[in-house]
Length: 112
Image 1 (cartoon, rainbow, N blue to C red):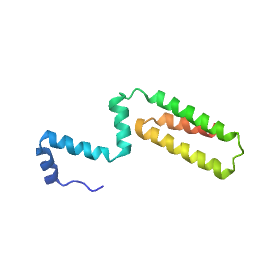
Image 2 (cartoon, rainbow, N blue to C red):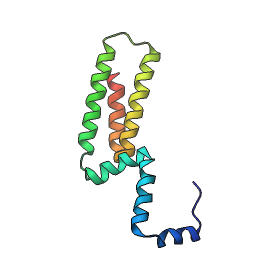
Image 3 (cartoon, one colour):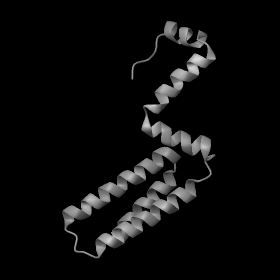
């Protein structure tokens, strides 16, 4: 990402607050990861990290148990593991839960 030059920074700083807010809201809406992080930090107060991790753990257990009833080839198992690893990464990006990343990844591998 290119850095802003000092003249542009100064021009943005001089803009009216209402216009800056409008531009900020437009920019934030374009970044889905940032929206998830802001929802967690601002709306939930950052206090739902454990609840989110537990909900994700329950989803992983239910999905892998359902898939485990049938015979899974190594290819299909990898598809499931990649899907849930991506969901764990989304959780970590939104909550900054480093310990939860390790715990959820180990849980996912133990369940599979």
